[in-house]
Length: 341
Image (cartoon, rainbow, N blue to C red; front, side, top):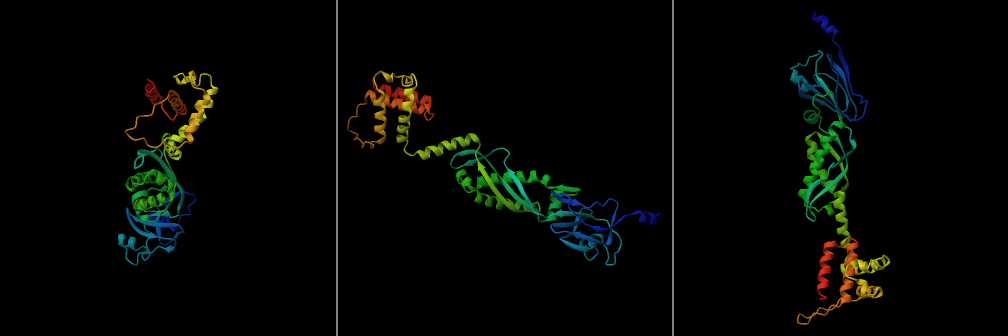
């Protein structure tokens, strides 16, 4: 009976993995009820590694090459199974192949904005994305911590874990560096290098080598980006006083073309001030030098009704352009009108 069971058994004399499809990181050789023939041939192709596992314990590891499986080429397995040097019987062992090719163009990014503390803007939310590449560098660690005894383990199954780990690392990097968002966004290459250095030990713990990491974009959500654009625009303006005068001078002709445009200020501009006079004052103020400081003891200069009306017109133009809030305009108008009393 024992002889018949032995005859029915199938023996493996060639072990290899042809990698028929892309994206598989680990593959278990199908053993079923078969046993490996002593002296069988093991072929490990370039960009592959083979791992022998005996009853859950990692035994021998083979890099690229062709091997004849004997007690000499399987020293760890020989020790675990207590074989002697003359052992020539078929044997059982789980054999796993791993692809060590570089996995290129892997994408990472923040699915939702992350909240960080920025030294310029305080608490802000930002987005970032880019690409990275990696490969299996330590098949034993990858088997023990990631792929396990699965028949196959694919790149897609690992993607989510790596992406979320990188986003967490990026959040920590922003917090630890203290670099402002503006500086980080302007130096994406340096940001990528710093992030790669931070993530390399994490990848190594999984048995992986992080070959490259590129930051393609760092940005704020749309609503915060609009505020940043406004701040940049205000900084580019420089002299706000002259810019205001220029804006008012441009808005006066538009107001004059609209029926009720000048009277819409609510102070009866058309009652005593001509359009030419208002425009002349605005342009004159835009080019004249700032007045010399007045001594504290000197009496305050009288404010004419024309000056008050012209100033209110300017403020109204700023309000219509969205530079000044309506509440601010009303408060200033009331303050100016008191000076006429």
